[in-house]
Image 1: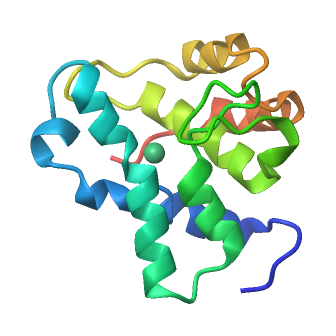
Image 2 (image 1 turned 90 degrees about the horizontal axis):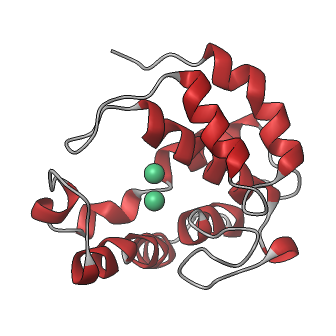
Length: 151
Ligand SMILES: [Fe+2]
Ligand SMILES: [Fe+2]
């Protein structure tokens, strides 16, 4: 895959692959009807390392893609995981995935929570000051308005 500026194809593949490591997380944690705590959260957070390992072992995935899988839970202020990366150490493609991933989690119905409307979900993203890329968040605004979940 060509490297360089992230394009639509990169983004689509990244969207499909980013949580591939969840295949290694026990179902009772993935599907727990409630908040994860303590050790459960530690196990769940391992999905980014599992994902990185599986793509690296498999071979053929671009560094950009492995970067997304490994770092889509990093935050610009260093408060994310697994490495507490900050600012410029987080690439644009990863930043885009982080924004869309959080948004999707908010508007989806999960075992432990009801779905949130798009506007409320976007306002939560906006409130995450310092953690998400403000320019990308702005560019995401019209998408956030239009997005409908697949049935
Ligand atoms: Fe994830
Ligand atoms: Fe995700």
